[in-house]
Amino acid sequence: MNISEALDNARKTIIKKKKKLIWRDIFEILSEVTKLEINKIHLYSDEFLLSIDEVKKFNEMIKSYCNNVPLSYIIKRRSFFGINFYVDERVLIPRFETEILVSNVLEFINLFKNKYPNDRIKLFDICTGSGVIGLSIKKNISDIDLYLSDISVDALEVAKINSNLLSIYGLFIYQGNFIDPFLKNNLRANIITINPPYISHADKNLSNDVFLNEPRVSLFAEDDGLFFYKNLLQNYTRIVDIDKYFYIIIEFGFQQKKEIEKLCSQYIKNNSYKFIKDYSNNWRFLILTNF
Ligand SMILES: C[S@@+](CC[C@H](N)C(=O)[O-])C[C@H]1O[C@@H](n2cnc3c(N)ncnc32)[C@H](O)[C@@H]1O
Image 1 (cartoon, helix red, strand yellow):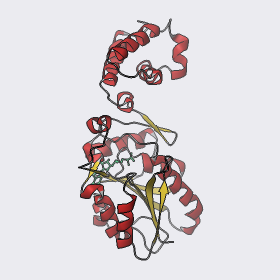
Image 2: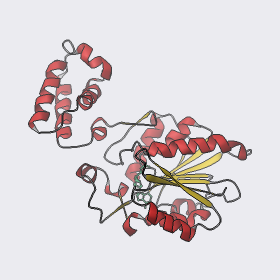
Image 3: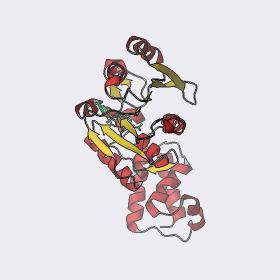
């Protein structure tokens, strides 16, 4: 079977299943199967013949696609902050908005790195999942000490795959509940990044594509989705180096600012905090500092 025939079969299957036909997605899948660069596929449409195994793999992937399995899980990769990360069903698919968090941290490091003259900056990426936040930062600024943690052993396996793919070595990986590994090991950070689960168990608006495919542990949190914010705000002074500048940034859901603001005024006494928005003009990040 050549490429034209494979594409035509995929088109027919997708139309039959009444799924929206997005050619870019089909080309991504075919590129994954054939290892041809996506922009070269059309050049070879007649002469490139798929092997029997490739046809089988392509058809299986198109079937998953028709069953609404997210493209990133099918092709096992997702671009984040201009870097290709490995992803699979063990981790949340990194969201584009989370790149805002990474940009803010890079800006902070560039502005403040001379304030840590004798030390390397210590960064904890808590609830790391596939590791995209911490690893993107370390890929851009290599001379920091990076700590990744997650409760999910499966997610940490994916983070390890990504650190190897990016040739990032010498990082510290901890499995455990939220900030416990840092408390237990008496570790304190200069920067903390967190994109925790924040969906309330009672939330009825979650799309089926997310609910049915992504790991529950990466989505839902107790206390109406506020568990991790409350826990962090009650305890952050125990896991940051309070004698130096510290910077904590945490993502939250687009309807949570009001509740989180209440928690901030309840728990933050001598430090500063501010909120920032995402590209859709929704408040999505809390930044907490001591300056
Ligand atoms: C929303 S995902 C974020 C993943 C990644 N940081 C990102 O931005 O794509 C939340 C992550 O928190 C982890 N998690 C859930 N409950 C946790 C807990 N109690 N302690 C530590 N990590 C937890 C999940 O396994 C998941 O990897």
